[in-house]
Image (cartoon, rainbow, N blue to C red; front, side):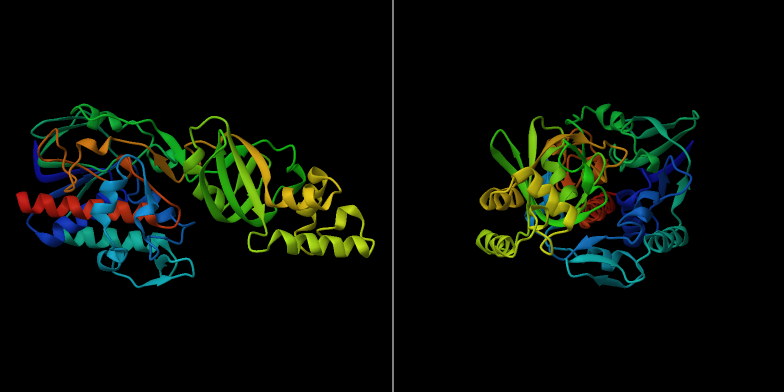
Length: 387
């Protein structure tokens, strides 16, 4: 039976980063990465629409959610430049603080990472799934083969985007050691809504301040693009707000168009157009996309105050999400109450859990990848110190 110093289950961002950090710390540590996919780092190669949004300079404690939010804050700290030290490439930053490889090609970043891992002597077993793991550690693969390791790292990912190999089935590995699984919901995902007021708006994009409500209580808000679709709404603002409403019944979205313009100024512009004899359907012409303006007027009626009120509070009832297949990340995961700041299990010495596998989800904009990298590196440092 083949034996390694460290066996890493999962060849995604967290697992590959952990392997890289381990070999950079001590090249004599034998490391094997086991993954179910034909290609390692497949989800990482697709991140940021293929451009590789790996971090964000606007990092703050408020960017992380879930039961492990405090753990994420402690592990990451203020180090948004971690990818600069991990990867052999240059990076650039956009106006929203999002950090990308300067070539804007995530697949090239993955190729570079895998190339270094091969040079460092990391072993890969893929495509292969781990069907069981025993204390000690003995890992059983789906084909019946077994291997041993002094330390084991579970970097299996969540349940989002099963096309990249993360279907949630690997949570059972942590549960076999007594770890608890929290409720799972899709996050950073498009929302299904009542479409009765937005059917003519399909494909139109608008800058909005979006606030989510449930039972009269504000759950959160986000500013950015809203894209109207045949099922509801998409866009950056919707991805940001989705973590607040996913899995919550009876939520409503309030879309505030023209968030930087005061209601009095909008009302004054409408009054001016009325005085000039504009038809009612064109009172917001030149102010908003014509179709959006007509939808607001149709809903708000001919009264100027009602038009402005509707423009600033265009409500949509949320009926659900597009689900895990379309979500960028999983909300929920293995309960972090039993995970130390060194990413080691409190229930089993030598077992480490990292990345999206845990109950941590970040905002849209590179925060989830930063968590994956940081947790993988933190686990590697702890493992190297103990071997």
